[in-house]
Length: 211
Image (cartoon, rainbow, N blue to C red):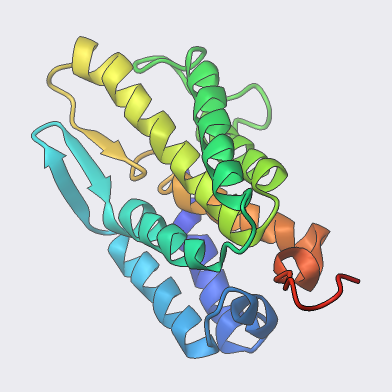
């Protein structure tokens, strides 16, 4: 299966370099240079696996860095319900992916009966869509999508790999789709941008009237 995450990052780097992402990056509190640097770090980091245990690793570019970026975006949360929405979206996404994984356990074919798509495509779409629908704002949506995907990966490891496949090294957010958590987060941000536009994260000041 084609590794979608690196290709997606390369496309985003080209768009950011051309100025097409100036508005979305500004709404994420990033300059164009910072955005390009972040995307480059995600791309290069996808080549690095960080060992967590002898049989569990976390991908740097598609796992750890998106998690750190979610924490960075959390500083933009201005409404009391945004952290709750992020946690709720993450829990809902992880539960949904855990249920889906029951149909694709390790050692079984993961190709869907639709144009030979891999189940990991479905995982990213579900996590990203739920992140957007429940998180609603950019920080909460991205955090929900990334944490939901990583939570499902951890469940998958504890449920199948740790118990039934002791000789297998499980790569969190690194195998198969090559970055399900990262792609889910990008999808969630894209949906917020397309469906709600610049007003999605407009801060509400108690001193100013809300229009």
